[in-house]
Image 1 (cartoon, one colour):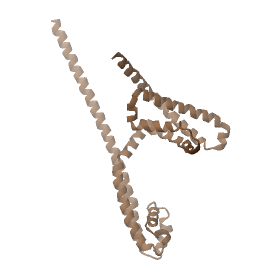
Image 2 (image 1 turned 90 degrees about the vertical axis):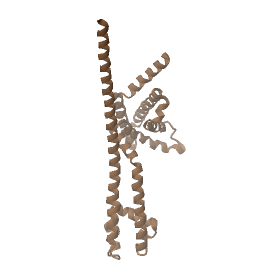
Image 3 (image 1 turned 90 degrees about the horizontal axis):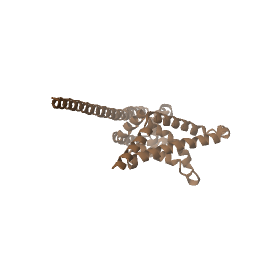
Amino acid sequence: MQSTTENASWRNRIEQFITHHAIQNFLVLLIVINAAILGIETNHSVMESWGHELFLLDHAILGIFIAEIVLLIAARGFSFFKDAWCVFDFIVVGIALVPASGSLSVLRALRVLRVLRLINKVESMRKVVGGLLSSLPGLGSVFGLILIIFYVASVIATNIFHKDFPDWFGDLGMSAFTLFQVMTLESWSDGIARPIMEIFPYAWIFFILFILIATFIIFNLFIAVIVDSITADKDKDHRDHHHQLTVQEELQELRREMAELRQLLIEKHAR
């Protein structure tokens, strides 16, 4: 029993050390420095002069990241792998330990994924990503809606324009790609709409309606779903925090009543 208690105490001390505010800020600084090093490595002239020093610094920072992961696993045990963010950090850091040679040489470029660890370290970023992930079901519905709109518009455009503009609307796939360009507003007027309007004067009606629906309405739907999800997560955190405060207040009130009862008992025995 005592050994179990000591083990739990030892794990708690490791957990408190790793999650300490100063340690987390230091790790954030190392992630930023490591990101800068990975960017500098793309400059061949700098690497010729400082390549060895940057290599040593990169490996020293990687060693600290590995030590952090090992300590967290020692502190949390198997529960470490139940946290999605911890698993993400484990994979990102673990990629650097795979020999980047031969067919695995592409893994060297994936070292830059360590920068994404900032998402886990900075709470505000983590909340935004959490909101984005929780909005995926709603975004799936919006994505399905835009697929329907693209399909209908592509069929219409192919049937009307394919004979005169086969390079843009020769088949369903080409029409969908052309309409995607129109949706992004990339040279849609002078590059696509106006040449078509020389043969089909009323083609502007089709393009204006498509842009209004696909670009403005659907794009705003995407934003609305994401904002709604982030707001819902924020409200949930606020409710959880309020509930936690309420529980703490109830515990404090209970302790105060117990202290008063204990004082009354002491006074009664003193009489």
